[in-house]
Length: 180
Image 1 (cartoon, one colour):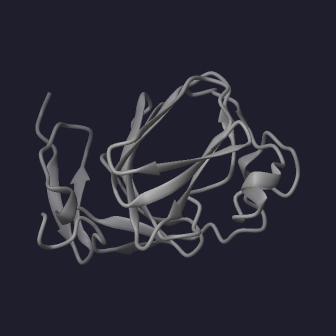
Image 2: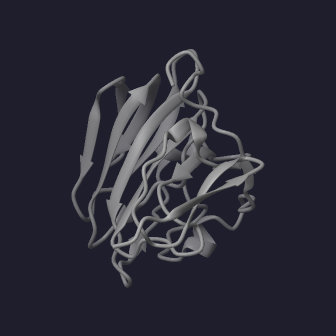
Image 3: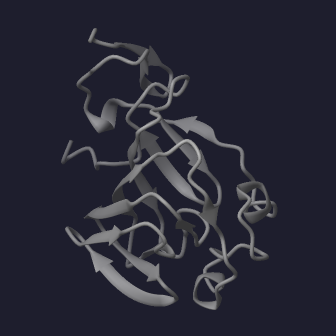
């Protein structure tokens, strides 16, 4: 396997192609959505991995990272790197802090919401199957944070219909400069 070239953009480094690379997360380009935080994904945006989704997602207090959902055939995991969040799992709220890990086997309903005094950085990883169904139920615990789909659906377009889906490429908001 060839090494992927890392090309410089005005918002940071972006891998060009499917090869291997080494980069500091603070040097990579990140994407921001006004509702669901800021994240970086560790692969070429033009050629996303078909097997593994992995990246760091930064959310502010009260900000969900997406919509409450369950991957019906794939698993996901969430490691809090910094800050605090609330995990809503199977309708129950659980507080998470630095180094706490949430394991979600296939079919586990979940979402995370920023909590505490400042941003929360979470390493998110999940299996990616081409035809993995995702279910987005209406959930009261998630709704109080704007993290519930407006109606029960298996369609991401319907689940996110009332949320701006556009993203902006930005410089890394994390890790803080003194820890990079």
